[in-house]
Amino acid sequence: MAGSTGLSATAYVVLGLVSIRPMAGYDLVAYAERSIGNFFPLTRSHIYAELEHLGQLALLEATETAQRDAPTRRVYQITRAGSNELQRWLDGTALTEERSRNLFLVRIFFGDRTSRERLAALLDEYEAAARTRRDLLAALVDRLAGRPESVFRRSTAMFGLRHEQAKVDWVTDVRPILLAAAAPQEKTLTARRGG
Image (cartoon, rainbow, N blue to C red):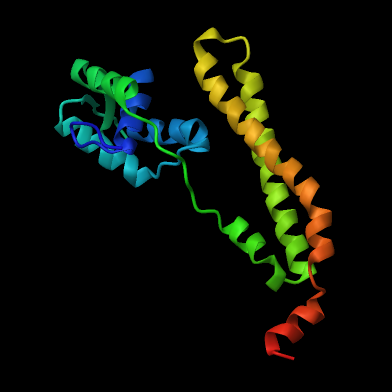
């Protein structure tokens, strides 16, 4: 939902990230990827476009520093107007129902058209990816433990950790049911040919 300034949610997220501490664009990209990117992915191009736009609106300001063997470094920091705008958005924006597209679940929904072998491979891939993300988030949660200044960021990492564990648990629960209901590969091929 856009605010009164016409900013997108992405712009507010970038504004919020810069409010944590002044950062150069490439530092912000890396920080976004390992933090908020776990639940609100941002591309490099989105971040740089929003930095430029927020600067034009005087919600961010940039300090340039010449570097000997690299391009000029631009470090962004939030302005008072930016801080006020971010606060207004955080305090006043209504949350909407979350809906996202999930092609994995689409494939499961149409699982009666998928061979048992392919279905098993899909479940294996999904579970492996969830375990990998779960383990990365668990390490992040551990790193942030005991750091009072990180309690809010640790809480979002804990949400991600539980979400990924729920995926692993779901696969464990449904795997035997789905594989029992799925047709062997040769039967699926025959059905597709109309025989």
